[in-house]
Length: 263
Ligand code: IPD
Ligand code: CA
Ligand code: CA
Image (tube, rainbow, N blue to C red; front, side, top):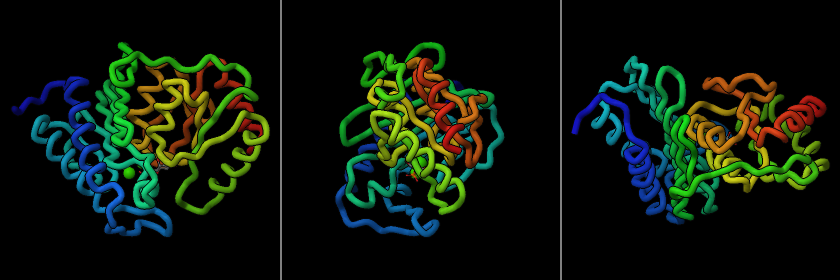
């Protein structure tokens, strides 16, 4: 059925679950790997998932703009814009490590309205609707209450480019490895944000993220009560190479301070 209206959360969840099943069907098989950079990979599963999502979304919402990691933009101009990461955690996937997700955000006039991140291995579907809340498999989510950095379990990610931002993040990583309960590097930014949303992680930061990595997860974290900004504490902007800091509101200023100290 063709409509150009607003999608429902249920529709977005269906798209994410279908794409996730495609990923799962290829997981653990030999992969066709191409290199986008020295360590930046793409597999046949990224393309398979993306092809399905592009077809499903554009046939249901033909006027909407779609921005997706591998194919780029569908060249339409519209206030209704989707950000798709068909496989977040490609390096894990390519190595047979069961930590990856599908990430889909629907935005209106630049504001995320609906977000879904689906982990097909664990059948965990994280969803959010702006102003209404965030859920994991329909159960409402809330961030942790941790207010001391030494009691906080944190997450980060490192850029593919081996440049000054990577070195800077190593300094942040060192700082928080000493001052927090621990720092995890799971390899899926979308899941890192969802884990903040459900309180598994107390905070997450990263220095180089793209809109498809964080558009859905940032809404899910914010709707679960997280403060989500850039690392300077300013509003998060969906642009290439953005920074991000998400944490429960008690911890957020302390993490921002720690990042500044370890610059
Ligand atoms: C990457 C993952 C990783 C993060 C990188 C992302 P990809 O996405 O989310 O955790 O550290 O910044 O680019 O390439 O697996 O879709
Ligand atoms: Ca990604
Ligand atoms: Ca990806």
